[in-house]
Length: 56
Image (cartoon, rainbow, N blue to C red; front, side, top):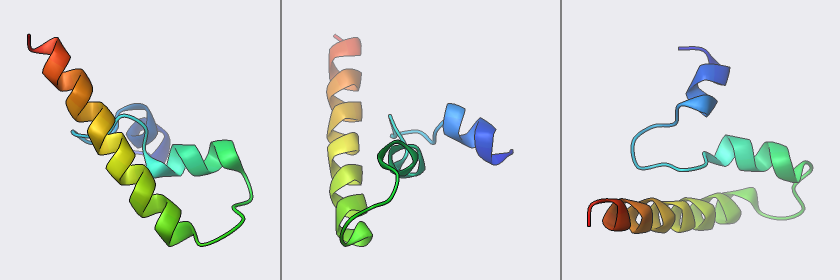
């Protein structure tokens, strides 16, 4: 699977991959590792929230 296909079809449990978010932000001012960790936690919460409401 190419990089573009992977971004269009993210892994299960992911709404918006970190790689896509970094492209939107552009040059990142600060510690990217901390921001990536927090983004992945937020994205996981969003995925689970949507999953919960879709299954009702």
